[in-house]
Image (cartoon, rainbow, N blue to C red):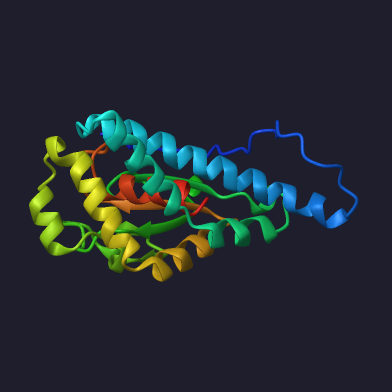
Length: 209
């Protein structure tokens, strides 16, 4: 079975706001951060508005859902990201794939994000660089989801709620990934509806990895 791979492609939009004439060079230094924040807010709002429609919310409910997503954007992570040198070597390339798929050099850091060890796989075969089981869904949430695609959107929201409860750990993990090529590994057969995909989306949209 082929693995699902997500390439990170995030780029701030050019500014269209005509502000007052800048006389302080410090203003120019703030522009990348302002643009990154605006792009992150817009991305979070659009994602949440679309998801709200899927969840059956009314128009007003979708807007409230979108605004709540905007308020949850991690500006601290954006600040850290913008403070780093903007070089090609510092760009993060993050992907997700099954841990049973062949090990490739392009995987970079191979990080298992399952709470349980994959069945029938030895540690040598897994070729892991790390195992971050603490960022996997809780046992109760994992059992409730049961890899039922019809529960996917509700699962994503519940899982994000769990991640928000340990935001400092998630932020530390996101900071660790920046500037590296990395692969989030999972054992589930469904490559489109699993917690690794949800974690990938959370890291890229909320923390700007």
